[in-house]
Image (cartoon, rainbow, N blue to C red; front, side):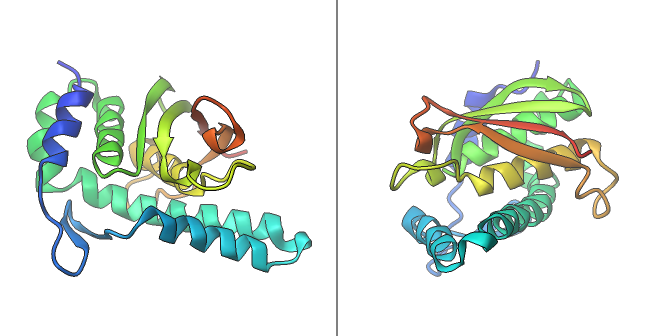
Length: 193
């Protein structure tokens, strides 16, 4: 048996852990429960506030924030009691199944309806998302910094050095985006040069 994505998403989505302060206190992490517009407007306002010659630097920083957050949050997820009880009984294909389970959590939390399209262990992974919060808002250029950063971080957790020293071995490039008029977002994770 391999990870049954739909079963994992359903079981994890049923876990009611939000408290009155808007914090999801589960999966060994504290995650806020803020509206999508908050995060999209946050990134948009930062990008609009900087001069043109700083845009690439700001985009890199938004990616890096998501990468670091995804690494530590991802570790909390895959070591949590919730993950162990729902996902681990289905793991038969090692790191690949752990990654499948991590992206099921990503979906269950409402960050992105995403999944692994292709994976070559320790080398490359392709993620496709048919719905993700960064695609909401005004049409324009690719801007899914969160998915990019978190996807690379998940791959670091699976194939990098042991936590907490494995961050930064892999990078993610967004190659398609709903926000650009594509049918889905697509993200390619590979070893850094």
